[in-house]
Length: 598
Ligand SMILES: Cc1cc2nc3c(=O)[nH]c(=O)nc-3n(C[C@H](O)[C@H](O)[C@H](O)COP(=O)(O)OP(=O)(O)OC[C@H]3O[C@@H](n4cnc5c(N)ncnc54)[C@H](O)[C@@H]3O)c2cc1C
Image (cartoon, rainbow, N blue to C red; front, top):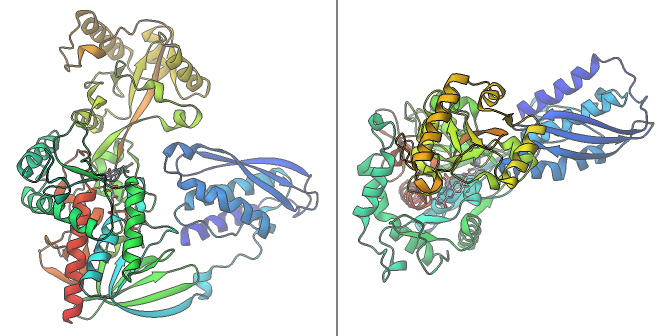
């Protein structure tokens, strides 16, 4: 809220130095543009001659390309509120703050263009925190869970099952966080679900071997994954799935199987289905779920035991007195400052997070304040790669996924097998290559032999997003990479294509196709991540520990809040939900046991 208020202040104060009369507007429709989450957002604002705002419409939203649909929440609400309240001091939409801010800033710009003074639309602005007009509320429960994703809801279900009264809060207007957008596939070693299937209970070893192999592609000396912790938690994932089934969570009858060889269960309805079933299951069993309620601070007693947490809603500050508090707020990948601090390599590489916007590290920051241990460097396991979101924002880029393009880094040098991401088994190679210093964002180079591809790229050229050249030398100039490096990479690659063998990186011959029809195009590609791997240190049953390994009484964590143990720098299919629900179940059980023992 503070950040949002500062935006309003700057919108309004900026307006005060613009010497225009408040309501001397020229009736009509005016445009304004402001930066949203990563890209520009434009509004068309219609005003009457007396300054009444009759319509605000978002005409362009570059952030649509992030695929999360989160900005849509602000677009659906903020323009209407501005018109209804004739004010720029409307409340932001939780989870879509940056889009909310962009709409307001852009509207302010449009009003200025109309000859109005935006300050006149800020008249009733007041800081509720300064005013102290929020109601102070006190509540008591055995277990408070902060965060209602897969980890939080499984923790709540488990705590309830173990006899505790449980409240779950989530800062968003909906439960589910990143889990909502997940495929809903859970690694599950030893589940009764597939007892008669070839992927049955006895392949813990195969799963571990696969895991270790895929995690070993980069940063070999990181010390992670922690194989003891991983083995322990993986071995329980099957029984967690069986427990979920017993609690009315439904899965597909057959194991989910891609090109991997470890057992995976697919929740009915995917990640969103999993959340819906968990919400139904927990609330039916008496868990009290509160949305739009943000955890802001842990409360500890004089000896450092956690005895509750403070939370905030639109109109109240709640002090939750709780014997146990479970942190399940997800990771840090949407908090640029924290990514820069804990995952500098990814930050330099231009990481594009695909996690929920709510992954701003709130739980980590709260836990650090009470002395929780953390990890020097987080890994931000790479998920995949993404074509420049600016291009996806203006056209469908699916035609570009052909694997026969040439990939070069920011210096014009080829650095890996461009077809590695053609399968889950091998995507890790490309992902790891991408984040080595100097490689990302990198470029994919195409020729114009395929009309569909050329059409997509031409659209990008027109928008100034895609580089183009009649020759490779011209292309290098347009890309701003070293001509000598690019022409050498191109010549070597063309020789491999002619020979039918890539002696440099072993690209499958099926993907070795000539790139020789001018004009040539180059588009930027960025690494993406499913979330972050780090958080706070815990025991194997989810009790949060200090840096010295001693337990902080009353505090528990699960999910991306505490997941460094499971990953190095790569990610493999379904590598989260089974582990996080197992850790959620354990943390909830420990939280309930400790609370009831008090
Ligand atoms: C596109 C995509 C597909 C994926 N598919 C799979 C898959 O099929 N299988 C798999 O295993 N993994 C998958 N993953 C990874 C997996 O979905 C996530 O790692 C996992 O859902 C994280 O769970 P969580 O409970 O830690 O966080 P979340 O599910 O994000 O829950 C955290 C919750 O905490 C809330 N919160 C945050 N701060 C506060 C606060 N201060 N107060 C109150 N609430 C707060 C958030 O709003 C959110 O609801 C996928 C990831 C992505 C991005």
